[in-house]
Image 1: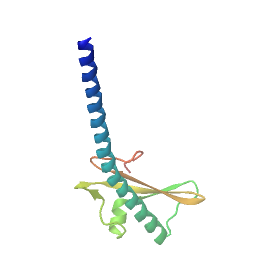
Image 2: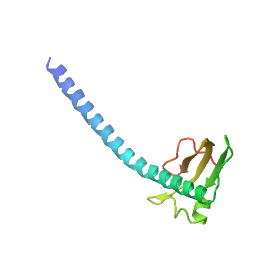
Image 3: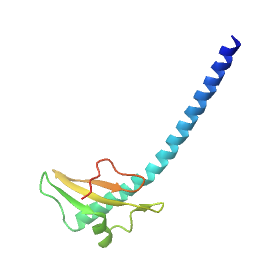
Image 4: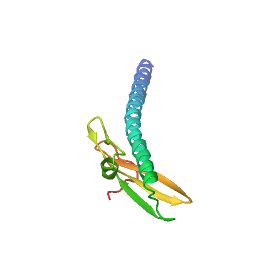
Length: 118
């Protein structure tokens, strides 16, 4: 009976410690991903402004790619990096009655789902 009680306490403590570690890890990962999502948003806004200023819109049902390098060269984006992690990226402009913009980035520690090297 005493051994069972001790095992129960050990397993309970172990479960609490594991849950605490997973929760902490989750918050740390969420904070880091938040910064990379901010980079995606910055890239997207820069692409929207560039497209609008230069009247660059694809025909209905097609896509246009605006690279990070183009946005930097034209002065719409200063840089694309977080914590010395320099990223590559592009904005995909599509049209389905209205212009739709989607930013994709690839960094050493983060890649947007669906990123394709152009």
